[in-house]
Every structure is written in structure tokens, then in C-alpha cells.
Length: 302
Ligand code: CP
Image 1 (cartoon, rainbow, N blue to C red):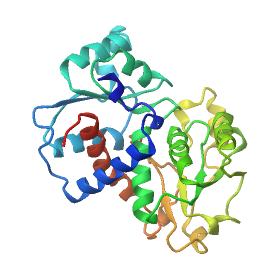
Image 2: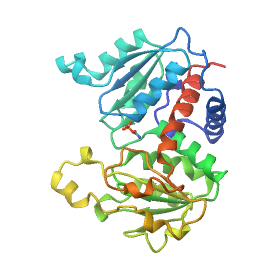
Image 3: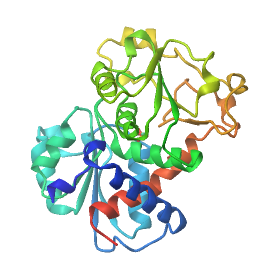
């Protein structure tokens, strides 16, 4: 059971990723199914969430399954001092699968090692968010027709943003060119750049991107992750470094799409929302189909 967990995007081969994307396409066309009848899915969210938790819960309910869990660990026995291990071992007795978001890097891997049921990592600290990556890949493939040879702009908080870390790892097999646009203090960590170097994947780092925006196939905007800063003054200095505005999109490729894992704060002006290059709300919708695919794959349901 344990090895069915999805903790890191690297837990799936490229072939498995493509299978998930195919299955998600099936669920987009056949959303209502009864594949999870009699199954109980637990959602344990130690950090706030709107899209990840609710799209998982929507996915489960559309598949005929049941949900238990908490959206605020303050309403659980965690407040009495219960350890992560004890919570996971207990909830594993009540469920067939646990979806967990936790503020600590590595917490999902630890949970998968102590759990008798599979764990899906719904975000662990600044580390990874693999189900977001799968829906990002689905969104990219759906809009670009391919995952190969794309020029991907990652913009914003590349240090603490777990979605960009998982996405970078997943795209490495598809011959991308990366453009990293960030504040000096929020650059892509060296560990990821070393991986790109080892694979001879091209990447460029910038402080501005208006002069190169015409090259982008995908602009992936991210919020500055306020909750990861130990120094709030540093957050104040680095937030709002990039604000994408409609006027900046004039010379972009016709099929370029703007993605954002959401929530946004100020990094995409609302005047972009009506531009047909804005894809972030459809991207969030795709999360339901992709999470239906992930759950059924992990539980081995046909
Ligand atoms: N993309 C994402 O993780 O959003 P939530 O924090 O709302 O779940």
C-alpha cells in the first residue's frame, strides 16, 4: 500500500504522468461516476486551502465516495499535542486514502512511511505540490497541444513556491526552456538549477521580463508566499515585485496562456481576467478531473 502514495512528482514516471493526463481527459468528458462507492477519503489540511481541498472533495463526491477530515487542525486533537504519526495511524484506520497538506517540508514522505493507506501530498511546506503539477501539466497540454519544447516563464516567488519546484521537475523530461523571473531574494534554489545543469536544460534568470515576454508559451505567475517568511519585513520588501497587466500582453504569442496556481494577491491585475490568454480559473477547474484520475489510479479502480 505505502508505495502507492504520491508524495513527490518524481514518484511517477513520465509514462505514468501521461496515463494520468489521459485519464483526466476521460473524467472531463465523464465527470459523474460511481467508482468510489463504499470508499472513504480523508482530507487532513494543517494549512489553509480553497482549491486543493475543495477540488479533491468535489472529485471524491463526483465519484460517489465519502469524505472525512479537517480543514483546520485546531479543531482536531493536534491542539492537545497529538503527533503527526499518531494522527496518521488513527485516520488510516478510518479511511482508504489520506490527502494531506502540512507546513513542514518532508511531512508527506514521513506520513507515507507510517501510514497503512496511501498518502497524497497536497503540499508540504516549500517542498512540493505534485497534484497541482499534474493539473498544471494537463492545462499546458490541453492549451498547447503538447508538453514538448515549450518556453516556460516562471514568475514570482521561486524560492518558497512549491508549485514551481514540482512543475520544473515534471517538465524536465519534455525539453523545455525555462525563464526564471524573480526578486534577487526569491530566486530558484540552487538544488533545482543543478538538476537542470546535469540534464543540459537551458534556463535563464531575469529581474524583468517585459522585453522577452513575446517568447513565452506559458507564463506561470506565483504569489509571494508570505507564510514561509521568518522575517515579515523581507516579505513586505519583496511582495508586489511583479504585476502582470493586460497592456503587457499585446506582443505575446497568440496561443500563449497565463497560468497561476492561485490564490493570487496582486501579481495578476484583474484587467487580465477577460483576456483569452488568462487560463487560471479553467486551470483550477481542471484540478477536479486530474484529482479524479489520481485517486482512481492510486486505489486501482478501473
Ligand atoms: N493551488 C492551491 O494549492 O490553492 P489552495 O491553496 O487554495 O489549495
